[in-house]
Length: 141
Image (cartoon, rainbow, N blue to C red; front, side, top):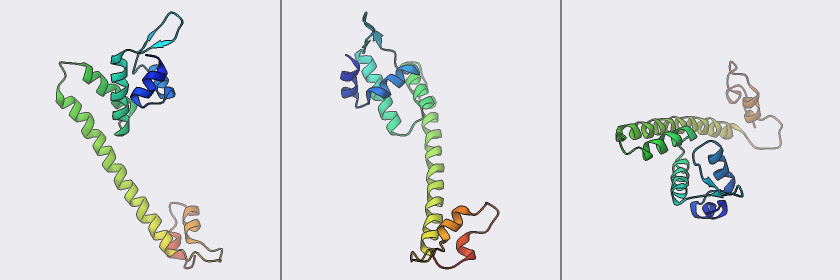
């Protein structure tokens, strides 16, 4: 299969497939004219990588998961550890996003959204870390 066929079958853009090849995640054969010749096993790896990336695994996680997938002597605990570490990163990110959302919602609530130039949202964005939040210093919007 050529890269176009594999891209259609895997759902990954050709550019992504070339990148995965460049970093050693897949190693398709090369025909005598230099074109990539993908095997069914390459397509399977690409589908595996596409699914792992859609779950947010890092490239390094994908590399390790692929290595474990290909290792018939692997311990499932090794796979579980990678997944648990990723879940911890997701939970941390969710917490950070919730904090950002709460801060932004608070700033939006404090902004009158009228024709006046005074805006607590911009004031907060311009404030340094050691200054109190703009919304507490000013009223208006």
